[in-house]
Image 1: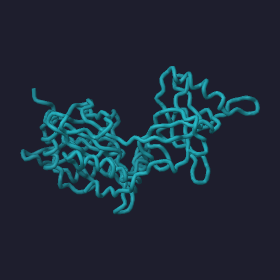
Image 2 (image 1 turned 30 degrees about the vertical axis):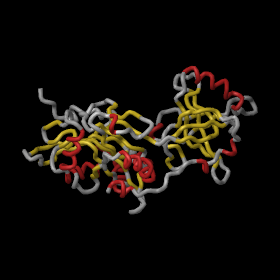
Image 3 (image 1 turned 60 degrees about the horizontal axis):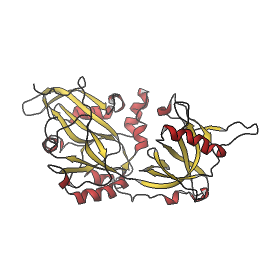
Image 4 (image 1 turned 135 degrees about the vertical axis):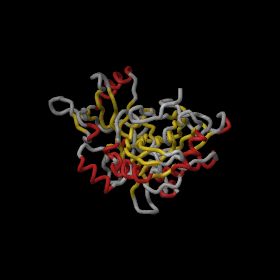
Length: 363
């Protein structure tokens, strides 16, 4: 039976990546590897449907944008829907990433905060943000062209077809850079972080598109920092510590919340309640002092309260990136640091990437 043409009614489950500690050597994978930047945005499958001609051109009649999960992104990016309808040379299914670049030409970078703001329930707000912070779609795979599915083709063929189909398209559609040079990929890992990217992806050149399988390999930045425990949230089960809130001192001596630390075992969650009890802040009546973290549309309906701790205990955590003054993602617990004084935990210890223009990544 011929493969069915992917469509919103028969959506594609995106191919996933497995984390590895270093940029992998191509000689260790049959058929070799292709390397590309790891974009820090919203994974998106674009379904552009319509009438197609034998040469692959045609008319786009409708566009839907699917996400890695079940959520459709179409309504949040009207400027991209308009661009796909106007620019794409024919019906297709593309795999890629939606990003929002900000900054002046020559000093642009990806802006995760601006991108996350695009997911808003109000149509008027969506329209305004589409004008103020327009998105870019970075294509990195071709899954179907016209009525023909490309899912079973090796990546080397899919990439060549993508370059032929979309290589000369204007903004806001971009084609990600690729290389088979492992040394260049290792340089990208260092340089491109300054433009807001968060690593490098390696794809087996001979592999078909494996839906929902971790066939690709990803290398992300991992760093450590000594931070101060500010408080903890109760686990969703109602028992034990779900996550630790941590902070750093800024240049004015103010202790700022920079994110959370999680991924404790059930046993460890219960142990932490007893370990941290001597640090719990209590009022004159002996009642536990609580606080609330800042709410966002992503935390709507969620309990954002936490038990406050005296800022005395230091822990070492692993993190990948900073987004402004906070960890970009949840950090991972490494170890307690009883040898460190809490006041010594400042932003100055953090490793900041050298600025790199996003335009040079896209060129």
